[in-house]
Amino acid sequence: METVNPADLQLILDEIAHSMAAATDRGQPATYIPELGRVSPDQFGIALCLPDGQQLSAGDAATPFSIQSISKVFTLAIALGRLGDALWQRVGREPSGAAFNSIVSLEHDRGIPRNPFINAGAIAVTDAILQGLQPRDVLAELLQFLRMAAEDDNIHIDKSVAASELAHAHRNTALAEFMAAHGNLQNPTALTIGTYCHQCAVEMSCVQLARAGRFLAGLPGCPRPVSPSRIRRINALMLTCGHYDASGDFAYRVGLPGKSGVGGGILAIAPGRASIAVWSPGLNAQGNSKLGAEAMEHLGRATGWSVFG
Ligand code: GLN
Image (cartoon, rainbow, N blue to C red):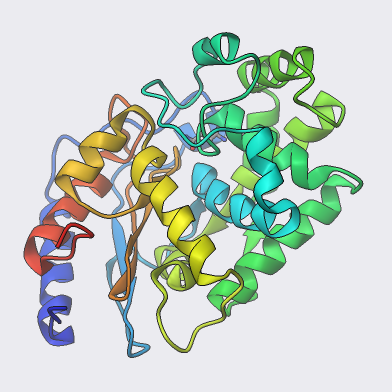
């Protein structure tokens, strides 16, 4: 396994942040959640955690942003811990090849979403962990998981983002109702969607997110909330499904498991080497951070980090 000297890595991060600050085509922040549409696209941050415990960053790496769908990695970890393989009766493990909020394949697949990272799948996962609990219990468990993984108690839900998404949740509600029609929803739709919108509204900085992802990279000396075999499986799903209909492109360009969110964040995992978080609010056509994906590609090229050797 090649190692990159931390001093060289810091230079690489500085160079990435410098070139991203100068980028003119930055994509558009998500506007279907109005509160996210208000975030300035002129921001870029990157942070990474290394096996020796070092943490490097550049740009707006300490600025909190809405993690949105990156929360789905952590709710999946919680759900697998709670339900084990029984979870796979409710959600598949195949790339969807469709947009993150697509309803199309749900009809074909009789209410079983293709994977846990598209909205329908994540809603089914949230519904599964909500069973027998109140939304506040599930959200407290998620926050506790994130704070423990990041070893940082300053991680919270942005209530105005949650309210903004909830007020425009027609499409996610439709996905939930469609699953309910097929018997794949256990709780009242409003409870599940309310919980889901709040989980997506967790805000974290790149530094906090990179720290929370250390367990997925199997870095030594960090909390280990999930077994190694399960970590491998979560990483496999991130690689194949983490960027929706751009998952193949991200795997091709970056070669690392990754999960994006419409807040403009991406968490990427270089197993055994680094946990990496990037953020820039402007999105590309597939709803993934435009500069975030470019930065990850640049980092991959400069370090040689790839799960493909
Ligand atoms: N909360 C967002 C939604 O449900 C999450 C989507 C995303 O980040 N891709 O639409």
